[in-house]
Length: 339
Image (cartoon, rainbow, N blue to C red; front, top):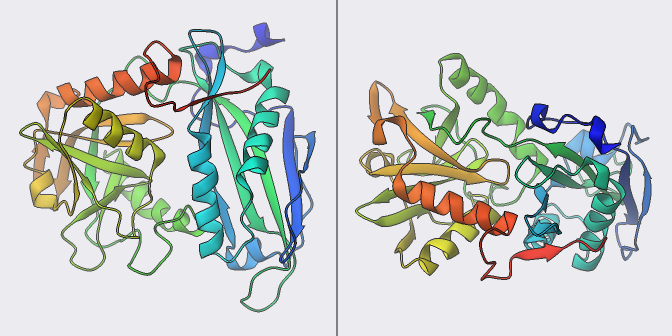
């Protein structure tokens, strides 16, 4: 059956697969393992907490077929723990790590024919946790649903990694202190769609959000974490509760330090970033997206003639190499899926 799938035509978009996983529990009950079922529409109450009050979280992760013909996840334990932290913040019962890992493994196993060959894409895995029970009045839902589905995706950059142009948002913010910016809440994403679309209509790939307090420091690029390099030192915005603690972000910090590169997690002003030697953003989808330019009002800062910088390229190749097992997994990040 896999011969019928045109791997080279895959983009980063949804392709319906065969099987999904669902588990359910009450507010004060323990989670028990869920069930596999055919991928498709599902029933939910019109009064569900997730539909009425946005009580929902999601994760994004990938399974890879490696050069050693193994099927692996990249740091799935970190996704499980981040979802648990988000569940606490949104007053939902956290899914135990064992059930989370078992669920994503089962979904990959049952949809194995959709997993692209090594180097030609990956299987994107989307776990969701939501208040599925009916509730009228702003309060936690009485019951919850944990759902996992998967889809094959092609390489984020077709034909090689290319640098992107970004626009600093002058009027919109992604998150504020004390809010939910530090967790992967579903409500964090819809407000960014309009600023993003406006930026794209002007020829930019995405927007950069500044902090809501001083309007001077870079926080995130759309839904990705930000890095820049100056004089051989790597800088990234510190985690203050308004920035998502990206797993790719953490991996790149560890990888850079392993390479002997100094990394500073600190406040990164737009002014400093626009004077840096190179810059990139990172996340599960693209791994690393090199930044070719940043525009703020009528000032444009360009990096490396629009080509990925030396440090950016090195980190990208190393991280992708670990995921594909063409480089040694010295950190123990890969989790093999039993087949």
